[in-house]
Image (cartoon, rainbow, N blue to C red; front, side, top):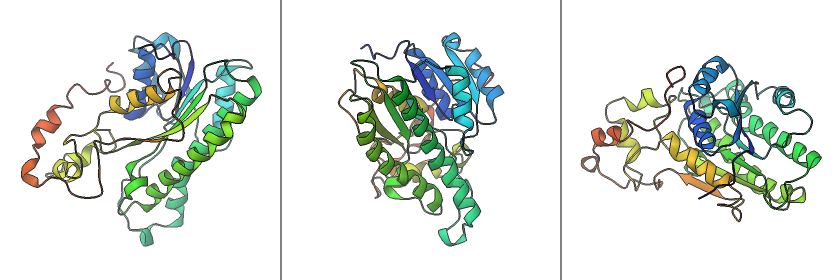
Length: 289
């Protein structure tokens, strides 16, 4: 099915990470004109882009979303005065790997996590909406904004209260902005994707620990880990003005049917089979594509 994303400008923030690269791959395959933001690994991101079939339609920018104004300045340089920003995937964020209960998380870490996961998304949304207001909508299509949330927002995440709080705030933000953006573009939509456990580079070392795959899949109806392309395809669906034209203010879980309770005993989980299903999952690491 034609998604209607060909030749449309799509911004993906946090594109230097494995999830961001997977999202970029799916939009690139749809023929979108990509702007890919990274904070400090832009050389790796450029190497990744160089190996893709859609490289000529992609631009890489460097911006620290935790600093006000840096994203806006970088986007203004590549977009110029009159290029529309049709679709945005606000994917940038950071998961603090050190587990700490809330009363042992100092204020500096809490604020850093909020800056990375919430305020970066807020600044991205503000730029998107301001540009849409200035240039106006494309008739009959509808722009879109999609946030990358987390199941931590739905179920909480022990010893990561800062991350859970930041991702939970995105839900309220999206459900507010979906009512604001239609005053600018009557067909514009705002949604959230909630990924669950996947094989991303941040958590991959943890998944190698004995029994970890069993533990994290015991609450999933689908006894498998997610892949970056699963999230990327969900992002394409939500951005598409043809496939999701009547979907806004929604929280789309891409987490294998996760519940807040154990569904499977240890004997029901085949770790080797789960890991084998990930072999062809995602784009090559930077520099190998």
